Image (cartoon, rainbow, N blue to C red; front, side, top):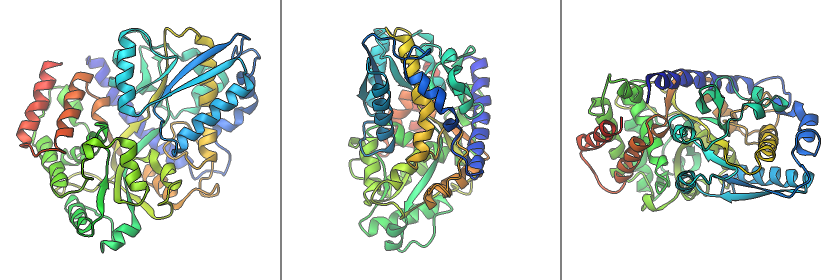
Length: 456
């Protein structure tokens, strides 16, 4: 990664913090509808045949690759509703959904990109993860489409920087989240736990107490390797005493043999050895792992705030609270979070229907926040929402998550959004292996450092 790109990542991390604060502060606003609601008339025009070119009269099929296969999720419902509405208004446009889980989609996109056969709309992750696709020329710039209907102004300030290269925006994010620890209050009570853990040692004690009661302590689906990595990075954020470890490695100020990294590996393995996770976690995908928590079979779920709406729509609704990841060995600031700018919708540079595809994505993203707000799923949205969440009937959990957003004082991006893909893959495999066997932390550090040295 070039120095200019490293600086851009540093800058955008600060901007994301500001964006997280912005959405939290706006949530307690005047009770108005979300900002996107104000564009209703122009949105209808874009959806119809008018001047936007959304329906030219010819039969067009747009392939929409996505990562929302879980039919119980609110986002899956929103996606299908918006597609149905658009097809009804544009009878010559057919939106064909290709719904895959995250790891399946990443693998499929790599194959498609290698043969220059990227679907009309696909999903990319921000920063370092999407850069190879931009460099390969398989993604279309979206600047012109962002200027339609004021769409660009609906995104939180600075958020689009994660999806921009050389002045062009190549993807539009579905969210802007922080990672939190969701917990089932009833299961905590069954295990005799009276308060949320403030330290990692307390979390370990809670894990043991839950395990003794036959309750799965922490839900996870590590078949999709990003889940374990995301949890691990919370620990590293604490043992490093704050954000910036990976940036320091890239800048040559630290390496993976640093005590902060090995201490994080040791702490992570303490969770594994204590039986914190489901049996066979590496054979469970992320959706199935999340459903262990959402069906009341696990006490904690360490994941992005995007899950709030899904939890409120599940059988554990009303029983769940959330807290920030605790300090580790007395280190770290609980107001610093793993930051998760969302997966981004990108358009193929080789689409046979570029204008129709851009018109549909403009419609989708202009109406996405409205649907999210209406269906009580706007927590962690990357677009500005100025509605009064409490007055709109959002849950105590949702309002509590918004309060956590207000406390954000900094944080880190995920490993695979920071390091180049080769180093990221080595990391993901290394962390996944810790679910299967205990490994000396110095060996784990060496695996990481060797991969970094070989792929600078």
